[in-house]
Image (cartoon, rainbow, N blue to C red; front, side, top):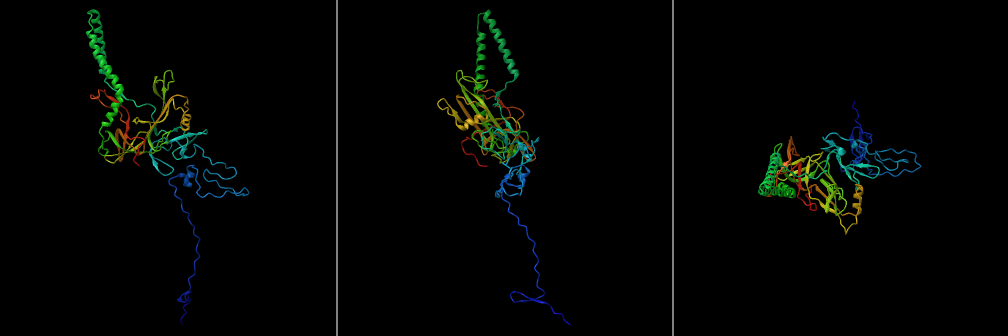
Length: 433
C-alpha cells in the first residue's frame, strides 16, 4: 500500500513536493557605529584619551539634561557633567605623560609613534599664575618662555673660537725676548748704543700686529675654512671619520619654535636682546663697553635632527641634543629695533619682555632672532658613528683646528663640538619636507 507524498503550493501557483520550509527566527544583529577618523589626535580617540588623562572631544554632544531629571550622569575621562562639574579641568602631573623618563631609548607617544627620546623632553610652556604646563600635544598661544627638558641642549655661551700655539714655542719666544731686552738695556747703558733695542722692537711689533689681526679676523677665517672644507659622502664614510655633510634637515622627535616670531618646526632657535651703551649709560653685562652693543638676554636651543646627504641620499641622525657640544654659525636677523626716534614698544614685545622679567626702560634696544627651519640646507661637521643600520653624527672628542692659514696671515684656529652652518636666508623659501 503506497504512502502519499505531501505537497505544497507556492504563491506563484507552482506545486512542490515536500512540506513547506519553516522560517527560522532571526536573532537581532548588533549594528556597529563607524569610527571617526582622529588624524592621530589622542583627544579624539575616546578610550585611548581616557587612558592618558587627556580631555576627550565629544563629536556628538548630547543635549543638556534638565534640572528636574534625577538620573545621574556618568563621568567620561576628565570631562564632567552634572550640578557640581564646573569647567573641565586637567591636573598637571597626573597620568603617564607627566612621568619623567630616565633613559633615552625609544618611548611610545599616546598616538602610538615611537620617538628617540623621553616623552617629557619636548617643549613645555609655562603660562598663567597656576603654573600650567603643556607639551607638544597641547601648546597654548601665549608668549610664555619655553622650558625644555633634557632632550634639548641649551647653548648659554657664545661659540668659543680660539687659536692654539705650542707651549714650547711660547716659552722659547718669551725667554728670547727677555734675554734680548736685558742685553739691549745693558749695551745702551754701557756703550750708549740702542741697536739691540731697535732690533728687539722690530721683532716684537710684527708679533703684536699679527696677534691683533688674528683677534679681529679669526672668526672670518674660520668661516672661510668651513666653507672650503670638502663635502664627504655618507655612503663611503667609515666609523670614526670626521666628515662634512651638506643636505636638507628635518626635525627629530622634539621640534623647536622661536620665542618671539613663533616660527614652528625648527631644529635650532636663538633669540638675543641687545642694548646700546652710550657715555655713562647702563651696562647690559659686565663686559659691556661704552659706545657699543651688549647682550642683555640670550636663549639658544638645539635638539637632535636628521640630515639627508645631497651626494648619496642617505639620512643621518645628528646627535645635537642632551647637552652635546654644538657650535652653530647662524646669522640672526633683527626683528625689533628700538631707536631714539622710535621708542614705542609693541604689545608683543612688551609681553615678551614681561615674561622674561626684563626692564622696559627708554634705552636703545635691538631684538635679534635666528633659526634653522625644517627643510633648510645646512652643513654639519662631526664624527660618523655606524651602529648596524643607524647612521649618526656625533661631536668630535678633540677640537677641530684650521691649521696655519698663510694666505690670510692667521694662526691655527680651533672650535669644539658639532659645527653647524646655514647659508639659507631666513626669509627665503625652504624645501618642503
